[in-house]
Length: 353
Image 1 (spheres, rainbow, N blue to C red):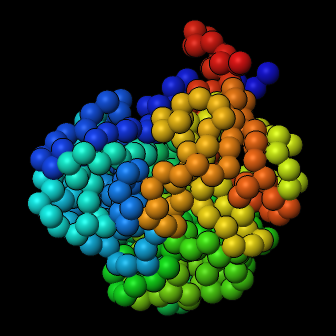
Image 2: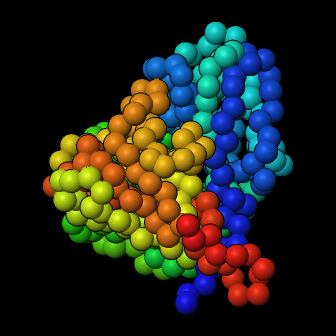
Image 3: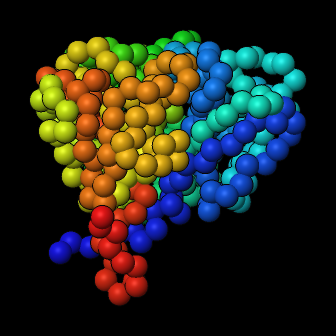
């Protein structure tokens, strides 16, 4: 039997639910100091999916549902990472769509750990990064670089080839997100995180070249390498912690099982051959099966009941054809709550149900 490399995934990824107070507050209970927080209001519409990371530094924010450059919202915003969570400023009626702490509103924060610092420049590629913060054990790196508008390569620091990459121009003009995934038709294809679009094709996005264990490639497209500053989030699968893959829907319920090798804590799906949302499910907003509480990464809508999945000890069962199991092609990104089997000699039991 294959054993997991992780005994406790929650030391590298965790979901936190909290309620806004309208006053300065510290959110705790993550179990680690986060380096990337993805925060969304669950109860108030027109509020963005706010991303804050250690590389760009708080209180700089970008949103998965927006093509806007990064902004700073120190009044209503995220003020600092903390040893067991993060701190939020008082809500004094600033930009509504960017609020993180409105009194009485419900929020979810998805949180990842890299190395608790901005890191340093990675020089493995032809385009040096300004900073790369990396957690090789968890298969996650975050890099900032300056675009050149000419094809090149960028070091990611993971030591293995990433299977998913998300990039965003953060200065230099509004631009959509660029997404690479191992499940796309080829390395010449891409998705946009802020749109429901089917996969597109252009050699200018990833230079028609798959990532390697040292670098990922970019062309001259402004999605990944125009003028301005960019941020890149790179993901590699880690046994017992994360999985990136694809499946073919069968236009039915209870007919598709995705093996991950762990009990999921979080998963994001996207149909790639036609227009469809980036649907996100987690084990905190809806702890039991069937899990039907979804937030869509590309829009500002609140929690909705769409589709249904079951989180089992070794993977995910699709229980609804609606949005998740139609007759088409799908990709996903998943993170673990618990490994199926822990490391040998760890004393941590299997979690089979």
